[in-house]
Amino acid sequence: MKVLLVGVGGVGEAIAVIAKSKPWVKKLVLADYNVDRAKEVWAKVGSPTHMPVEFVDAGDREMVAALARRHEVDMIHNAVDPVFNEAIFDAAYDVGCNYMDMAMTLSTPHATDPYKVCGIKLGDYQFERAEAWEKKGLLAFVGMGVEPGMADVFAKYAEKNLFDEIEEVAVRDGANLEVRGYEFAPNFSIWTTIEECLNPPVVWEEGKGWYTTEPFSEPELFEFPEGIGPVECVNVEHEEVLLVPRWIKCKRVTFKYGLGDQFINVLKTIKMLGLDNRFPIDVKGVQVAPRDVVAACLPDPAHLGDQMFGKTCAGTWVKGMKDGRPRQVYLYQVADNETCMKNYGVQAVVWQTAVNPVIAWELLDTGVWKGVGVLGPEAFDPDPFVALMPAYDFPMGMREMTA
Image (cartoon, rainbow, N blue to C red; front, side, top):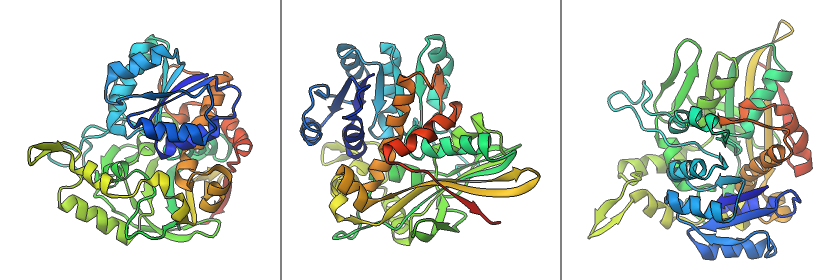
């Protein structure tokens, strides 16, 4: 497989680290706007000849397409902030190669009733073009990170192997990570965090379809495994809610994230000051997006690993019936930051995200997974993915829950 990796930030670096020794990765083009950053990652993985470094403007559809053609890649993998998704997605279609991302195209809140009614939903741009991709015989594999991605695979695994009928697929994410030496230092892209946390969260219910709620609504205390403990989780906009109902029969889908009071208060302040705006404004004759300023003022998550301590957990809580009895199961993956830094040289959150697309690449390369059109992780057999997880030092956990 030959892949053009657009974006060599934290997750892109982790993808390169994981993929460098895979014999079926014939070429992995490390492309970034910041060439020095791409070169840093290239050197870190041993300066391999099959991982050339290239400059790319992720928002330039024609440049992305030209780079993909020059390297004759089989797939363009999108590892940048989702504001660039449309350009990269369209570039892959232009070239005639497959596409994969870890977050779908962005939403736009409803103009008059944003906290009850959906406007443009996550991924709408992509799913509206599914027929064209299918007719061209191409695969656009959307939402294949950890959440979305692994969490969706777990939902499909539960449907296939653990339940006769499903009441709710409830994705829950929590951690006890701390970043020492900083008053405020997100361990993932603040650009993406602002987008998903301040937009109206989406819920799906059978008979009602998709609808929205207030940000940070419906708080619940969830007990996370492996020593993380209880964390308050709140509704956040996330792709699983838009993906799961398309392929899994259930009655409700939710996503809740353990943010913490300090994080929520910072996000509310950012919104109150208008610093969440992703569109450029005039500042003394210079066009600048306020959200980009916020991101520039904070430490780069890719370089925080040495200051991070604790564990992060991503997982899917499934409720339903099995053999005539109620059942609840939490399928999860826990990453310990100290272990990730020791074994892979990258911090836990980006490593946990990056493993999943590389597993998916392998399943596509070997022909175990096949498909055309715009598909999410639920469209594929989950068993081969789960079977490969131990080989990637990426074990799945399962906990039976009580009502």
